[in-house]
Image (cartoon, rainbow over all chains, first blue to last red; front, side):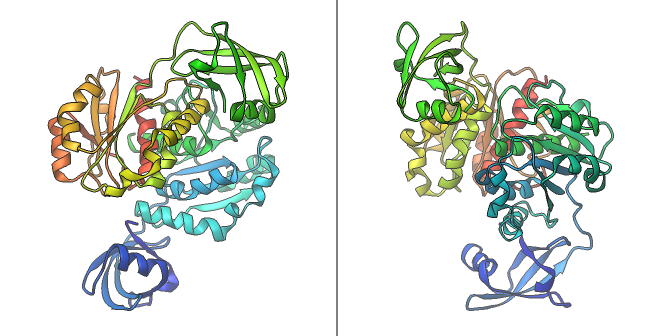
Length: 243
Length: 243
């Protein structure tokens, strides 16, 4: 944890916070704080800042926060991902939030098993703490927006224009040679689509291409969905950074 | 599994193989093979090839293999990694093998906890099957070479020149601006060094720099070791591919 994330309701108008639970435990047991010490904090979907420990009372820590004037920008990459196996999805949440993702759009696809949608990994109660864990790792405050779509065609034809209207759209597909470097142009947002382990089928790929998705190669090796997501997200971020 | 990896002792001089255990289970339960069917195989550290199922006998599958004339090249990126937490190390083996790594050089560092070396995740009996799982995912046959070094200074001063004599050496370090693009030049191998979660200390970083490691930036976000390894390995591979 490189930042303690606070929710709006944690913080008084004057910037005072009383923490118990896991955040206090981290301050006490890992950072070993005492009164007067400064720690890095952030307000969920708000600014980063610095907090001074004002009191330690048993397992409770009191802080006074000063926040920066500006809020970090939402990360400039969005992800359209065919729902992977539950175990893989579970591993992805914190990593995606740490890498930086504006929006996570989860979708059905022909090669997604039905029961992947019924797992607790897709409930907000499960994924929200994992996203926050990733933000705290990466010192970000912007909680990724998550939506889950069971109808691929409606998502691609109707909903994507609302969810990601201006982004450059790319779809990772094995066997394609083009790399993103050639397609990124002047866009300042990218929507990256990653298919199921077995790949998109022909209908899905045609539909994506008909809705402005540019197929890009992913190298000669077939990767597990979680490895592919981390690899491609980092490549897209690097491309946007180095323009 | 996109390739069934065979060991040399599995295969007769004529190319016949009798499989039981998990590889037969995969052929029977996932691929649902029957006699006459072709499956993709590879010989560990040898060529890829195609096998025809010659018989299915209960939970045993017999194959006849034909191998390609050439052996895949060893991946052109090597990794020097400060031993991470056991859980993180456990998650990394298969992903590293899938991404493609020639050599995994694990080292001690000031911010590596002593007991990280005592875990079963660093025993060959544990990591070898995970490396093979990653190779089978990525359709590679070249088992990464693994070595574990408890003395950082001796490793860097004496042993690295033998383990990775000609590679471009880069060390990922937060806060550095240079990116690998500027340093890769005409090298055809890269040795990538990734430190512990808390970073290399000043002594370690100076020693690495004195031994030809070029510090490169890793972007503005602090990542968990496993996420950082996947992200950086994929960036280095992409750089080598796109020269």
